[in-house]
Image (cartoon, helix red, strand yellow):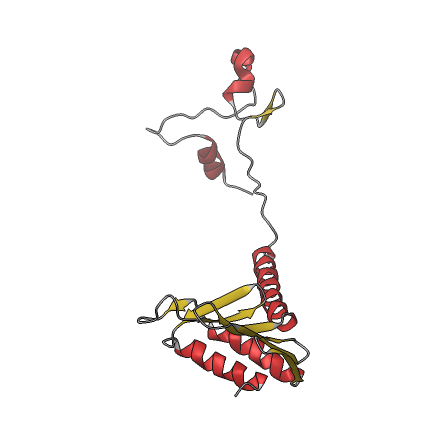
Length: 187
């Protein structure tokens, strides 16, 4: 049971404070024509008046799933391009006769030159290692200082990417080139 003094003070304001009338539910009776516009009604006349408090969000792990899917797709694309594509390298342009070598993913090596065509076989694991080495070397086209335009250019092609270097100033290209020449049996 609540003492009368506490119950009475809860209803009546203390002396000196502004009087706040109790809510009866009929506060807007005298303004009935504007009643819908005096208080927030989210769906007045079927039109949403206030912003929704509910936000539409993607599920929590959605970004992670999309990022993982993109990474897997990119990794599969680069791996399959290198593993399923033949390696071509050779000499072109300049004032000498060009030649080229094609190493198939299964290890078939074909050398084409002005003297004719020859074939040999290397292990398919070695062909895959060479393709991986080309990808990991991050080769770039380059014309070395002192290399004249009539010098022949050496090229390495894997998939749809061809790298051409004119001269001997690119160390990564030289390393990959010597491994390819050794694998094709040209030395």
